[in-house]
Length: 211
Image 1 (cartoon, rainbow, N blue to C red):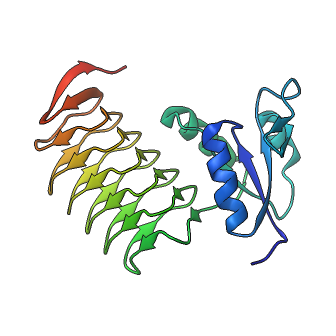
Image 2: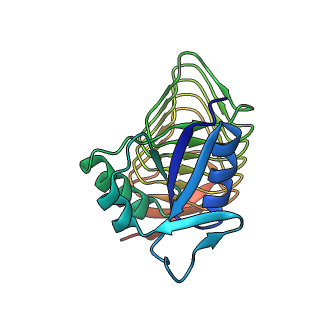
Image 3: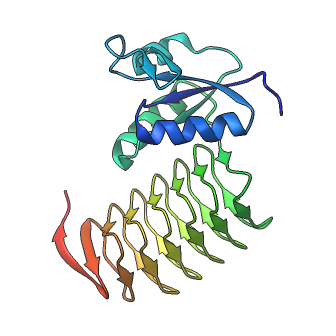
């Protein structure tokens, strides 16, 4: 491991803690940027050294950045701003994750412990592939989506941008889920779900629209 690697983490929250833990496993030294600074200067033993605006202004050389914010839309906004300012976004993959040599994972994505990403799956920019989730062959996960822990996406599923697939959910093969859709925890998705809705249940049904 190269202990000289440095990572700036945007978002000092519970999700930020697990991102920092993974980053250290991968050999990074980490610091946080959060808009609660300077009122909040520590997250556990890690230093919070400035706000998001401070990070954009500093543009420190040889420092990668990751956005550790669970809210998909906020994460998208922060990632877009960082990209516009020329920052290099990291991709973090836990050593215990199983990732096919034929899978594609875009920058800014975090893949946590025990996740499986199989052949010809594609993960978009800025995603969260959480603990022990399974992304089967030929499945596509759109940018800024969050696949929660213990979720299983079967083969050739299409997940839109900024989706939230809740903990323990299952999506059968060939299903399509539209952009900005939330699938509630423990749901079983057996039919296509449109964009901009919340769906829940076994089988999952649309329960309301989302803004």
